[in-house]
Image 1 (spheres, rainbow, N blue to C red):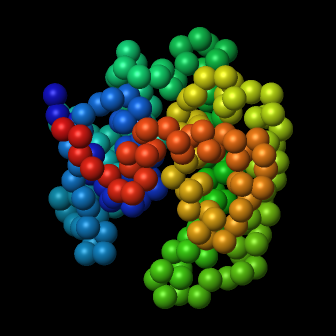
Image 2 (cartoon, rainbow, N blue to C red):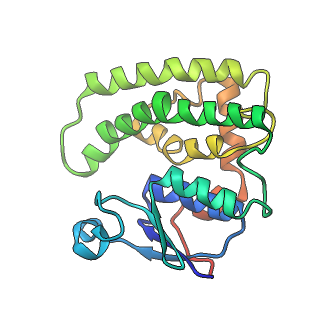
Length: 214
């Protein structure tokens, strides 16, 4: 069995997958996709990921893309390794799917665009829009206020056991202070939760870049 992750070492989406591979203790090869050279738009990559994005996973010829879909595939294929990450109890799984939906619709849509607006644009020599950044942060803060209430009574977003929904948040979360906002750190329960997640060996293994383990 050979699992190969194709992506970029500092891509938040690629790190989202790498964290899960680390949590499930799955050996993997890693192939760097050279984004500045447009490798993600070349025919060889588009054959595997027709939208020209990263990452994608090759599991002995089985190709799957979209970081959250890959994470679910890994968690279920290697269900007996490491923490479950996807509950099997129907009601617990319902709460997991609920938290995962919120992450995508009410968290990532704001935090990723805020990071792009203030950090990525600056890196690319473009001019950030302060008003747009402020509006994105304001929307994000509404979500984080709800998170802080949820996390006041339970350890993680879907209950007292860690799930993929928690891990999905981490890669962009650590970039937000660099982009110019302490919204995650200003809320005590959110800050506690994020600290616990970022101290896990899985994040420590990928935070400075992704290295193959196979």
